[in-house]
Structures are given as structure tokens and as C-alpha cells.
Image (cartoon, rainbow, N blue to C red):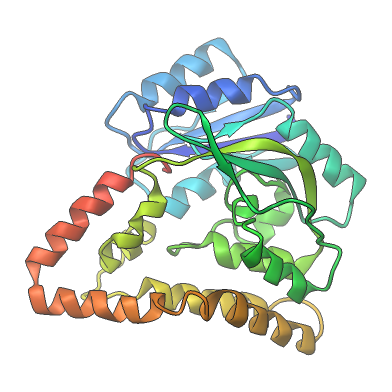
Length: 314
């Protein structure tokens, strides 16, 4: 059994997938398996994945299935993992050679830690560095509500969505990535409520910023946003930002520990996210109103932008 399983969920990711897999093949920790879950791509994604599997036994292409929802495809790699530790690697991002080894060492040094992650740099389409996150000198040996606050104020969202190394069974107990738009936020809050994190003070993971990534879905049709995660759902109106807010507060209020600490964590969400991002909730209402007033014209316009941004994250 490998020490670390790496899940690479992908949908139509031919543009960057080969670079991503090459970076995983070059890890200094080689006791790993790389599980590639192709979400019924229509480009060369499958061909690229199978070429890696043919020449390196550490790469495994999961059997083809019909198109899955976004989170279902990510969680499919978690379900197939056999390693003690697990990491999601987005199909357009790059793990630097020492990333896995450093994160595993951090978890071994801290048996109480829930997740380990390195610092993150941002790269563009060509791989050139264009910036970094606000993730220097992090301290997670603090009360749970302060970990929740740090999650929002210090740009460590990446730690739980992709690039963070988890204890596999613990992540499974958390249920993996929630099936809703922005699901890495409530997952991060649950992790923050459950114990300290182990940051690695080196830049060892590269987040690629480009025009086709899923973060650009912020401008999308709310129904498309919901159905990307729950394809079976049939609704006339949708409020993904409201659903996300509800999930985040429930993650805090249902967490372990004293009731006072859970309420302080909810207050940290309010002051660190809900109030600074207050426009997201009325924006949801506006999008549904536009949908109602303009009918099919608005749906087509939004749907085109969403489909164009689906390509890289699986």
C-alpha cells in the first residue's frame, strides 16, 4: 500500500494536465499513488492520463463513468485511495518536488494535526510566478474560533480544497468535499473546529490562475452553479451563496468542543466573511430576479460562461 494517495479529478484538462502529472511524478517522496478521475472528458485528457499509467505504475486511471457532479468526481478519488495520507491536486496546479514529503513529515511531527500544507505561489498560464498568498508565519495552535478566523483572513482556502495533505480516514469521516458550490469553505471550517493544522513554511505548491478555472463561475447562472455539484437537482431558482452561508455556520455550530467556542467560531465567520462579502447574498437575489424578468436570454448568457469555465478543475 502506498503511503500517500493523490487524487487528480479532471474534466477536459488537456491544456495543463501533463504538467501537473509530471510534477507529481517528480516528487521526492515516491511511495505514492496518483488516482486520475477523468470526468467524461471530450478532449485528450483520457489519452494523457493513460499514457502516464502505461509508463509509471504509480499512476492509476479510474474506470470511466458517466459525467459526475464536481464534488462527486473529487470524492471518487478519495473513495479509491489506499494510502495513509491523501491530497487533492487540481489538474492545472503544480506540486513542487518536496511538497508531499514535507507535508507528511509535518503530520508525523504533529499527531494532533488535522491537515498539513505548504505555502502557495500563484502562476499564470505559462508557469511564471505572478504572486503569492497571505500565508506567512501562520499559527494554528490557537482556539478553534481563531483557526476559523485565520482560514478566512490569511488566504489558506487552498489548504483544504487542494494542496493540503490529510489523514485519509479522517477526511473520509468528514465526508470529503461537500456537494455544494464553495464546498471547500465548510470543509475547512469543520477541519478548523476539529484540531490544529500544520503549516509548512516553504513555498511548495503552485496555484495556476487562468481564465478557464472554476473560480470564474462567480459570474454564472445560480442554477448552473447548483447543478454543477448536484446534477440531479431540478429547480426553477437557486441560491448557492445562501446555501454556502448556511453550510458554513452549521459547520461551526455543529463542531466539537464547548458551545461557547462554537458560537465564537460562528461570530468569526460573520466578521471575517459574511460582513466583508455581504454583497454575495443580495447578488444571489438579483441573479434570480434577472432570470425571472429576462427569461431564456439570461439563462443562455450565463450558461455559456459557466460551460467555458468548467474545463480545468474537474
